[in-house]
Image (cartoon, rainbow, N blue to C red; front, side, top):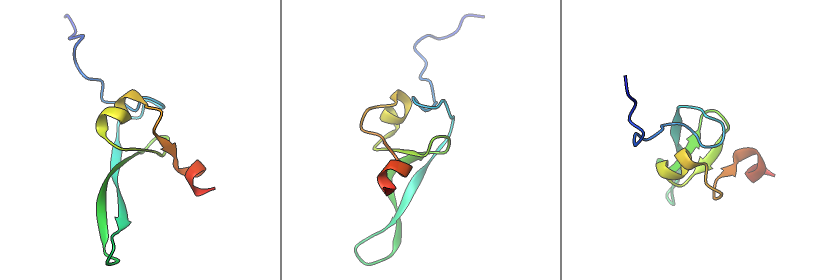
Length: 68
């Protein structure tokens, strides 16, 4: 069975994890809200969008590095 080479790979470009979640943060009024940022469930890096998560772009930050 031939595979579709043009299909998008839905995995983290860094660690290969197949899932992520949206980051929750407080807004100006103190309420918890979802942000546009995605966090990989495998490596914990944060990504600005799904395309960067898939590619493992340079703009991603490790949550551990950001906390220091």
